[in-house]
Each structure stands twice: as C-alpha cells, then as structure tokens.
Image 1 (cartoon, rainbow, N blue to C red):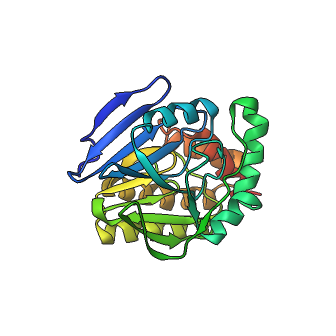
Image 2 (image 1 turned 120 degrees about the vertical axis):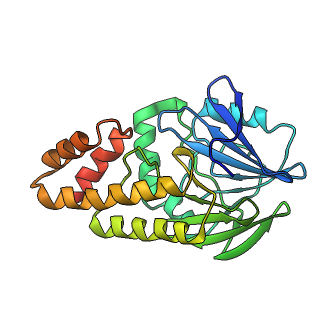
Length: 263
C-alpha cells in the first residue's frame, strides 16, 4: 500500500485519511490538536479496533461522531493514556508496563504537564485498562494484532495490512531522543522495520509513513549523535540542529532532546 493512496474526509477540526485494503480499512485520524496527535482505527466487517485515543475534548466528540456507525470492539492504549472520556464503555487493552507508564510513570508526567499547558480543553483523565495483554498475538474484533513490549509501553504489528504502529517517527520532524543510547535503540528498531518490509509505519504524531521515511530518520538520528558529540551545551546543539534541518517541525521535541542530551 502506497502511503499517499487514501481518501480524505474533512471533519470540523481534524481530518480522516482512509486506506482501503479490500476486506479491511485503516482510518488515520489527524486531530490537528496542539500536540499533532494521530489516532488509528482498523475496521473489518463493520467492527473496529482503535489504536490510541484523542486527548482534547473537541477531538473526542468529533471522533465519537465519526465512529457512530461502527461497532468498536476495543481500544489499544499504549503511549497516550489521557482522554478517558472517549468511548467510556469500550474495552481498553494494554500491557502492564503501558498501564504503569500512564498511571504513574513518564506518561503520567506528560499528562500532568499537558494539563498545566492546555487547561480545560485537555482531558487529563487516564484510561482505566480493562484487559492486560502480553507480547505476541492478540485478536480483537476478528482482527489479529502482534504486540511487542517496549521500554515504556508497546508497539503493534497489524499483519493483515503489513503495517506497524510505534510511538514516533516523523521523517521531517524532530523527535524526543533521551541520549545516544536511545538514538541507537530507535535506529535498531527502524532497521528491523526495513528488514521486515512493512508497507506502512503508523505513529502517534505523524501521518502514515513508509520505509524510505525510516531510512531518512536513521540518517537524522546518526547525525544527531554526531552533532551532540561536537557541541558543548544544549544551546549550541539546538542551534546546529536547526541550521542543518531548518524545515523540520517539532521544535518542542528538539527542546526536550537538547535538555536530555545536556542535562
């Protein structure tokens, strides 16, 4: 599936890009919110499984309206634990470490920061996980998913559409990188995607991407490490990254990366 072959449905705030694989569809919801969230709906035979959740109230109501004619069988909550008012009666699936990440770990810290930054428009309530899942295959609504646990939460392979979901990629967007070792772990993961030959890479903060994008990101991460090694502080690091990548979005992510590398 070419990442550019989809049908677009314009919504009031966001938009839905629909990829048709024949017996199964992928609905990629671009929220157009303050943190550029993406939410994915995998639909088969009228049943749907949602990957991640919107976390701003206007997106929650908009997506619930869009889903009103689908039978939502479950929701996979990995890296985005906020937004619990979204479809409150639908089963929530997560690994144990993802549950902890959202309730008391790094994910909860992000939720607290976003609550301070965005106020009442942000739904800070945390999803209550109803089903703990393990690594390996899980079937929800007649759709197979393969769960891979990560340090913070979990990634999701969707074999029927030859796609994988992970937290962040963004071939022309800065990412949150904690240090050189973290960069190396991301590079290794992206290389594994290339080896497996996925058609689409889905992420929480970008439209669906492909393996060419993964290669671009690998080069960026390798260069990021080099720039950090040659710089003496966060400010010079940030300045040099901006010089080399002037068109990249995600400046707030670069701020966080600079802070981590030179903490």
